Length: 241
Image (cartoon, rainbow, N blue to C red; front, side, top):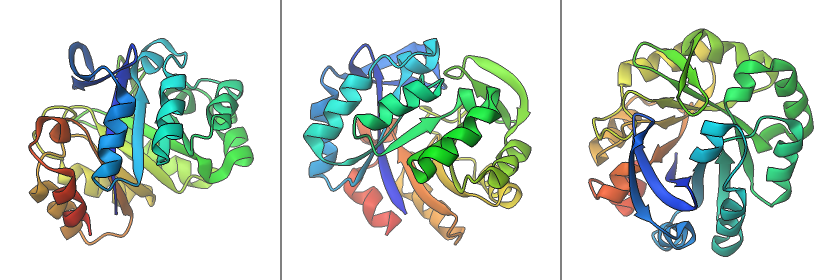
């Protein structure tokens, strides 16, 4: 199980939101590269980078910052937020970033998904953001769709997708713990490997996910809990192992 420190970027700064609300922005660092190097020093192998400006406006705004993080840290990087067409997808991956995250565009354009999977294979990962009721949201969590996480995730497997990121936005940034029951339902319905995000707060939260004893949980993304100090990265790594 991989522990992914999250670096969310607005205007070139590392921030965190609560439940995806841009008005709740809290700044943690004016230099995301330095933040990345801190996680590297603590033992991170991967970073999860979200371009929140890109997610909101549909155009990658902080790609150069993400590329600089990749260059300076030497860590593996997955990056998403604002990737809406094949040209931008190619541009992201041409920077050397290891994995591009598609969210909103996958929901809107399955033809692009097929093309992207065919061209980039496992350098592509799908991210689905959903409410406590399982309703999927898009455009940086600003717009509700008519889709539910359970059926939609299951529909991705025939497209060649084997792993997805799932974010419970009702828990994200709240330091309230993950919704274990909902995660179990996604595991059961989708048949996919999952990277879990949203609400991870303590070592006990990681242990609860480990206790499911399901190898399909391949990673955990932790953001606010690391920055607020409710969990240390070292303890998170130990619990995951």
